[in-house]
Length: 50
Image (cartoon, rainbow, N blue to C red; front, top):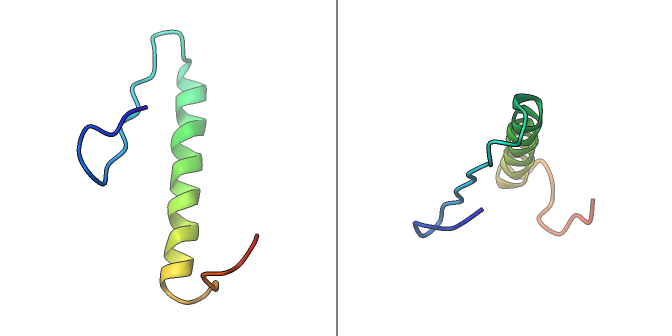
């Protein structure tokens, strides 16, 4: 992983990573973004520890 441009994250998996593992990573990132959106909308408090 790297940060080639400010405010971004670049993930460059090796050839040894299976498509299944890459799909799992993408799904995790999508879920994390959904959690961020819930905080941004006020649905979850910013100070929540979960």
